[in-house]
Amino acid sequence: MVGECTLEVGTAAAHLVRLQDGSLLNRDADAADGPREEAYREDVLTAAAVSRPAAEVGRDLRAAAESGRGFSSRWCADPLRLASIQTTKLLPIDLKSLLRSMESPIHTARLQPGDNVSADAPQRSAASNRTRPAPGRPCNGWR
Image (cartoon, rainbow, N blue to C red; front, top):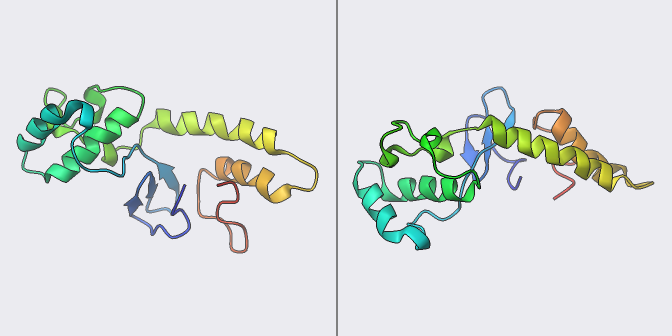
């Protein structure tokens, strides 16, 4: 959630996307943009097969690999061409569901007498569908 407080509407950074309505959603992403070490040759050839910048293709390939949900046509604009991969442009509902299912137990586990800020942060995030916090509230008190 790093950067959630400063992310402008209609922009994306790292794992976050701020929609036009102000909602903050997560996406699969990877900070590196080069070929994956374990698939270097394949990634270089995939990036060479399209006119997009190789760094963009590399970032999408790495994000798909890091997603833990495996490679499939879900990441591609053209399901028959891996070179059309666009992982970082997608906001998968299953990622949102996974994160939501993790936030509630974290909230419950962090409930401690007198610790309202840290206990409330994940619940606020989950309940608000990741919208920008109200003025005066901690941006993300559970980092």
